[in-house]
View 1 (tube, one colour):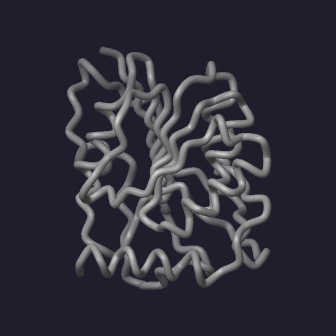
View 2 (cartoon, rainbow, N blue to C red):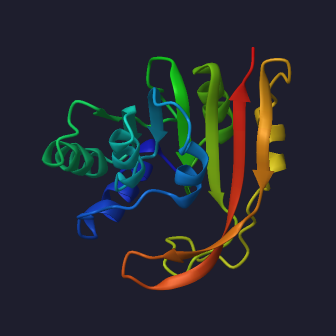
Length: 208
């Protein structure tokens, strides 16, 4: 499938649903970041913008990127309307082709999963390399299929956090794994429905 197909698909996903008036942050983000000193953060695949807005409210300066122009434009508007325009920079990137510039204290990759060709291991390795010393890379993947997911393939298999880490092939002298587990939670879908889901959580810190 081509890059054009991927862009069209995700543009349609966001354009096909109402803009979120008050998007919520990822539960794994809030539990991980609370207590960390605010710095520069990168949100890969920002979606509706709940993570970026929450981080900005905590004092972080956030670069938020998505493949869909609809998503980044909506987030830019939300940030301005909440007085956070000076803390949230939005950029459109197809991570298959380009990666944001800069060095970061926190990089989030939440549900960066797609039906289109994406060398995720390379993207995540690039993200790890963009961390400052002591910085964290938080990867949260689906570990189960929610009823409202765009992907209802019954045969889908979700890689474990350990498999994701192995695919990144990071030097343990430079990066260390601080968390790799599969917690469950009750999630709320776009229409307000709820379901128990499993997250695959991988937290990596740069130590060298």
